[in-house]
Image (cartoon, rainbow, N blue to C red; front, side):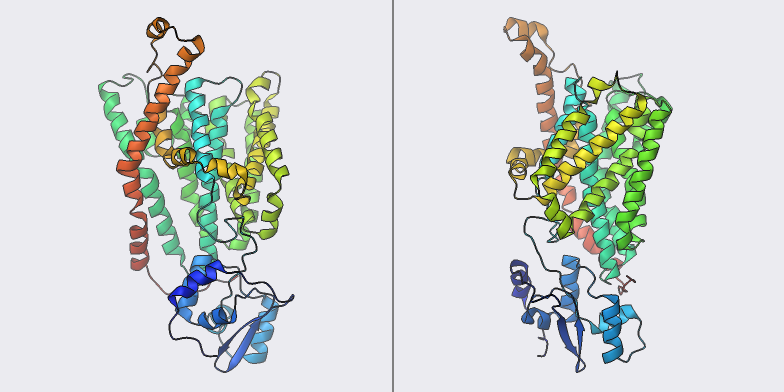
Length: 488
C-alpha cells in the first residue's frame, strides 16, 4: 500500500478523537520503504490508514511534535531488525529517521490531561485563585492560627514547577526525536517567560519608584534596585534579615526567575530519561540544607525567603508533571485516599504557628517537609482526576477568572495601604457589628486589588500574551535548522 501524496487535513482531528486497542501483547507497526518492511515490536499503533498516511515524513514530524511520543523502538529489537533487513552504514538515529515509522502512544485514559499531551490542565486556575486568596489573607487579615502566606506561595511554586519543568521535559523529548533543537527551545522559553513576567512587573516597579520619590513611604528603603534584578529574596533574607513591609512579597518572583535561569539549560541539555532522577536528587539536597538552616538557628526571613527548599518545591512540581505522564502512576493517583491524605496533612502541617512555641527548631523544618508532601499528594490528585467534583469546583467561573488575573493581583495587593477603608467612627454611627467593622477594610482592599488586577489583565497582560505565538513562530523561523535526532 503506497503512502498518500498529501496528508489528509481531516485525519489529524479524526485520530485525536479515536482510540485503538492493542491486539495481543506484541502488536507491531509496519511501514514499506524500498520494498523492505521494518517491524517495531511492543508498540502501540493506530490503524492501517494512519500507518500509511504517516509514512509521509512532514506529516509524521508535525504529528510527533504535537503529541511528544515516547521512544518508538526497543534497542535490542531495533538492532535485530536492522541486521536482518538493512545493510546501511548510517548511525542508529539516522536509521530511525530514514527507515522507521514514528508510532504514536495509545491514549489509555481520558481522565488525565498529561497522558493525552494536552496543554490545558483543568483546575490550575482555581488553585491559583486559592493561593492568591491565602496570600491576601496572610497580609491583610493577619491570620494567627494558619501560615496562609506560606501555603499560598508554595501552591504557586508547585504550579510553576509543574508547568515549566514539564514543558522543558517534553521539549527535550522532542529534541531527542529530532523534532526540535536546543537553541530554539531555550530561546523560545526565555521569550515566553519575558512576555509573561516583565511588562507588568517592571511597569509596576517604575510606578512604585516614582510614587516613592514623591509621596509613598518616603524615607523607607523599598529596595527597588534589588527587585529590579530579581534579588529580592537575597535582600530580605541576607541583607536586611527582616520583612520590609509592602514590598516583601516580591521575593517569590525572585525565586522563580532564578530557577528559570538555570532550569532550561539543565533540562534541555540533559537526556529526558534522567530528569526525574535529577529532580529527586535536587529535592533531597535542598531538604537537607533546609533542615540545616533550622538547626543552625537561622532567623525566619532567611529561612522563609532564602531557603533552597523554595527551589525544591518547583522541582517537586516538575516531578508531578513527569510522574503524571505515566499511565500507571496516574491511575494510582486517582484514588480518593490521596486527596484525603493531602487535605489532612495540609491542615495539620499548615497550623504550624499553633505549635511553634512547643516545637524545636528542627521539628519546624520537618513540619515544612510534611506540608510539602501533603501539598504534593493534593496536587497530584487534582491533576490526575480531572473529572472529580473538586476540579469542577475549581473550574467555577469566579475562581477561574481570579486565577487568570492572579499574577497582577499578587503584585498589587500588598502595595495598597492597610489603612484604606478603616473608618471606625463611621462604622460606629452605622451601628455595624464589631466583626464586620474589622472585616470591611480588608474587603475593600480586596475589591480594589481585584479591580486593578482586572484592568492590568485587560489593558496590558492579555495584549502582551497575544504576542507569544507570533514571537515563537518568528524565533523558530529565524533559528530554523535541520533538527538532528539526539541519542536516547
